[in-house]
Length: 186
Image 1 (cartoon, one colour):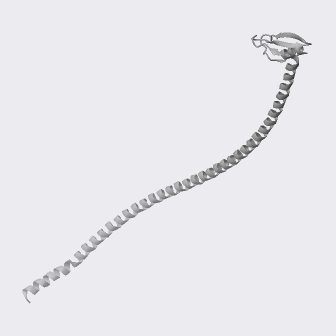
Image 2 (image 1 turned 90 degrees about the horizontal axis):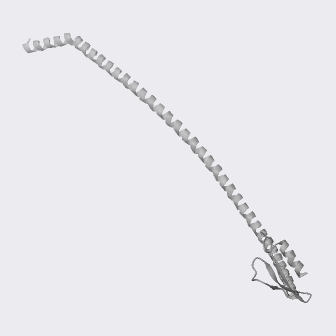
Image 3 (image 1 turned 180 degrees about the vertical axis):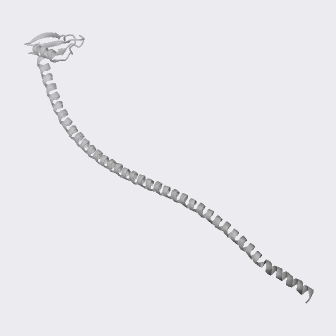
């Protein structure tokens, strides 16, 4: 045999003899790598599980917040609708009150107009009556005297002076003063 072939066979023999060791080393390395991969996967799985739990908690929190916000929104909508209904009712009451006030104002204006017309008639009648008394009695007022009602009248074809001084604190025109004036005229 040739030396090269012999060397090749020796080398093959060594390789074949070392093959179980090489395979065992390869299997040990493979088992070690598999164990590391399993450990890595277990750690990743635990981390992912923790992340998932954290995300689920965050999601549940956000869901609870969303639900609370929806409830608040519903409560605010309910309050808004109630307030709007109260405003509308108040507006309608206000309009009804305005109509009543306008009706009362119109009614009172008519009543005041009637009273005014009646009072104007009375004043007109009193003015004519006083004018008649003045003409009959030839009444002449004396405006120079302050704080008194004085003047001259014709009574039984005689000129009679009169002067009425109100009591302290009395107005010039009050019930007692007017009665005294009528006594002079009678």
